[in-house]
Image (cartoon, rainbow, N blue to C red; front, side, top):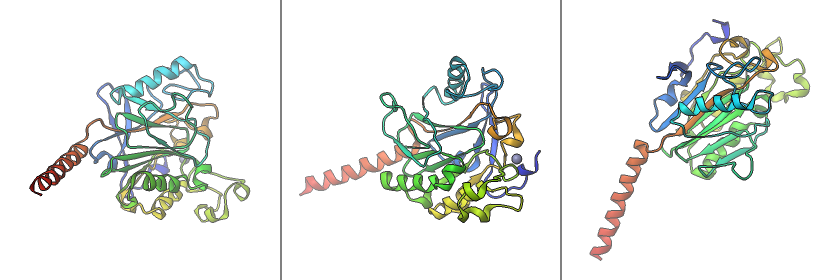
Length: 292
Ligand SMILES: [Zn+2]
């Protein structure tokens, strides 16, 4: 095991296996929540040939389209064949609020953070070294999946995503559970040209050999937005150190993208409870109205 995987701090990411034999990782804290399904898949087992071997889920990087679609179907199968929502990721800080069960049917989605409260779809981030960061408001049943590469991180895409969750859905940052997925670790995130690429306010996340700790940057951005530190799970897996399991752009150049997926389940217990409360309140109001 590489050094970058060692050291447990707070919540971790754990590996599970589905009944059909497909391995994926889950965050311990998000796994405890009701009404949400999620998984960070590896590069196996899929249909793509080298250098996209084998579970590549990204089009437009040179892989065979049929293989990509077959791979996407494998992922969908692990989520009850629900609609998977993909966006063209462009290293921006653009946040997309998904408001229908069939988004992108007229205009393709372009952006790097997906937010929704719609059940029975799943939000997908395509990864090869960048972080996929998942956010869940368990009370309001709102989720986000964020593509946070270094360009997105220095634009604070996480802060923008949380602001969107607050403005559109009334989320409280202190209620959010967060998970930072497998990504380029500080062992491998060397930025020789950091003076021109990375603003100096991030230089205190750099060691003497110009390696940056983007996990710490994301954690601190989440906390600065109001997320409680104890509700953040951080994967210690470095993708470049683990190309047997994950795709790594830095490590392999031309390669695939693995899937980080999260969705709200169709009928969660929490939604059911909320409906009961509304029914009781409604009955109470009606009853008072009759009395008057
Ligand atoms: Zn590494």
